[in-house]
Length: 376
Image (cartoon, rainbow, N blue to C red):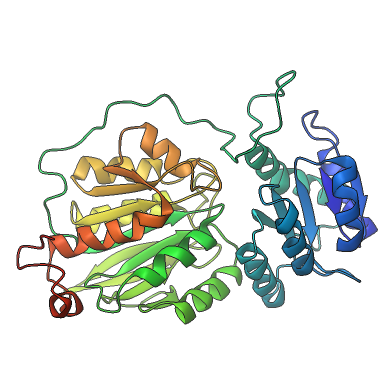
């Protein structure tokens, strides 16, 4: 790993935090992006950690240059847990960064900071570099990011009776590593007249989810907001779970409201996809379209099992287009997904299933794209 940061303290924290794991070695350090670009061909790293705010050449400038020569080199951004840091991190992800971690703050000691680095950074390094149970002698460096937890061998698709024929009343989406860019591709494709609400869990800390919602809203036809307690779900609006809060749904008369809580993390996550999906299935039963996009780990698997058993529909992103094929991979390998699709086509499949199951969008009727039975 090449560590790029102008802070001596952070470089020490990273080195100390990873020193106890024999699968990771710091092959070089750099105090700014300009030095980093010189060191990459010298030490040939498998992964780079990159600070955002640095003198001479900052992280955003550096990631642009790295992607010109090294389009597949995994890069993890180091970000501060501030609004400015969140904005810069989302920009770095849009420029090609693979993932991010937030810098330890007010941890009290170097040892505590190093422990935070080990807990937060090490799993992402291993995931993006394809390190599993341990190093394999003579194995080449990974060329594609995969989950540290490999999905089990494929099982036959478990399709419940009449699956895919029921009306869709809500769209639920879960994602993690690579998710901000995946959402930036998918959500802007949804039509303004989408006849159902959208609920989303993206694993991110506070402030980051607020900035992501604002960024998606500025680029989308539907309205995108960070979820707040008491919000009434409306068609054509997407609600992004806020960082550090589980988001669930509640019924009040004929209305469906958002509720937030800080119950214990699930799958080491808060918000968690499983928590949202359980809630959605409990209210909507089989009238749910669940979508699992790129992400590390297996959050969403249990929720998809419940959705599948209820007779709902499930789509999963394929391995080739995923930054990390952990979350969608577990769902696909468990035989829960109706279809496993590339990111480039998954939005259109979502729209097709929603429109086929319910009222035709007036824009589609005007364009003559569908007849009264929702057939092309």
